[in-house]
Length: 347
Ligand SMILES: NC(=O)c1ccc[n+]([C@@H]2O[C@H](COP(=O)([O-])OP(=O)(O)OC[C@H]3O[C@@H](n4cnc5c(N)ncnc54)[C@H](O)[C@@H]3O)[C@@H](O)[C@H]2O)c1
Ligand SMILES: [Zn+2]
Image (tube, rainbow, N blue to C red; front, side):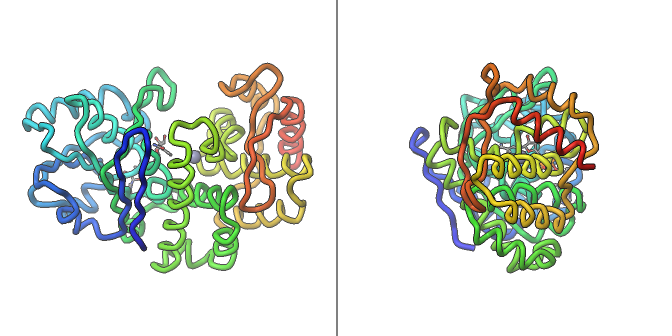
């Protein structure tokens, strides 16, 4: 994989994404004063590869640990080890570890430098890129946070082998999302190399992660603060978030069904052909992602009505203008409701 350089105007800071081995982390760091933030599972699997000079701090696993309380205990660890601005903080783990490590580093002493070694597919293609770091508060996800870029992101595809299948699926949902909104060639590659990608064959997974992070970093660098193009990254997520809440689906599964709904809406708007919706559904199913859901349509409609992005009777949704091309369109809530009802009845 080539090195990807991400430059963002507001921070005037360059963030570089490398592929490599976790064991080479020390060589990538500009200092030996390294504080690693990780969780117990990742440390158990890969702690022996961490730089010998680094101190390691563990946080709990799961969304319930993505909190200010966890951040406070990390700050206390920084104090104890006399961490100062000369140090580099490195988050080694999934999206949760990266989000928390980036936030703790960005706020301690008004900001320390940090880097990520994302160890889930979702973190490699999504969470580690884009400069958003944060924690949950009072039941709201990512309610407190910062916009700040890591110095570098080191992607080691080898560590993905120990991921449970459900975690891989979550990542592939975002990969398919990136292909659908921006890259029809990646979509075709996924169609013809499904087994290779699922089996994490080195060539296949490298291509998939590389293309996917190029898409996300490209969109982010053109729209760092989320006013325009970045909204395309929400493809499948408006309905997805409602399904996550109402049906308790995992994020990737909910986004998968959300992408089917958005694709069907695109057909209704005359933007996408029925044949392409079938292709999309086939690809999602091939990656063991759901294309429908058994749910109470009324509850989903209610959750959508509470969506922060709704403006009176309208909501902006991301639709497809063909595979690999996204467009943000205003939509009447009743149009969305009709497709939700179809979805719930079609099961
Ligand atoms: N900042 C952003 O732009 C952004 C974007 C997308 C998602 N996110 C956030 O990312 C989080 C989800 O991240 P996630 O899906 O990586 O989940 P996660 O961080 O919970 O990791 C999933 C699980 O996999 C384990 N794990 C990690 N690497 C492993 C490996 N190599 N082998 C075996 N097990 C491993 C972890 O211990 C954890 O239990 C959410 O909190 C979400 O809000 C942030
Ligand atoms: Zn997502």
